[in-house]
Image (cartoon, rainbow, N blue to C red):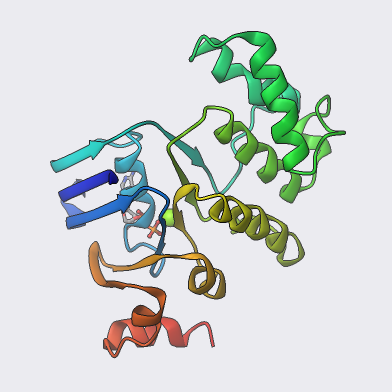
Length: 226
Ligand code: ADP
Ligand code: MG
């Protein structure tokens, strides 16, 4: 079953077309990794998929709800960790307060942050802040979780802890769309990989297919990580 289908999506900023007829599907339980050089349109694609940006044309069909994890965590600095997590489920989803707090505690435990619920974001490391933002996204019980370069703002030694959290979610069959520059991670965790360049999907397929691609652009891109 496709949880998300995007068909013939186009998007321009001023006169520059940054998404040129993009079509993709995300199946339930699938991990889709989107790779490609800076400026190729990956964030714009994610932003169109999650309604942060309006597409110019094309069709987007969703089954269920989604959550989003940003590169720069985007936590509310004046709220505690707990408040950051419970706010939207209580205020937006109008869910039962006790139940939301209980679930938030269990998510914090899962993220290894059970002792941080009263801390403020500025008191946490980047890796801890990103784990809070993953807990916050999960607290909305999304059917699909989107990540836009979740480790790009982190020091290399903190990157692994976030990739591990995402790997664990994949093992629980969480459906995820992940924009990443972590090629080994994409190779290991993705069910499907899309390589974007200049607003186009240039190559796509299983990790085995994409990493063995003979496409010149693809090979050149992968060569930069060797
Ligand atoms: P990526 O995430 O792959 O690095 P982006 O989707 O951020 O690429 O950007 C694709 C292109 O669109 C870039 O040329 C970028 O400058 C441009 N762009 C992105 N957002 C905007 C915006 N809000 N206004 C104008 N141009 C934008
Ligand atoms: Mg981007």
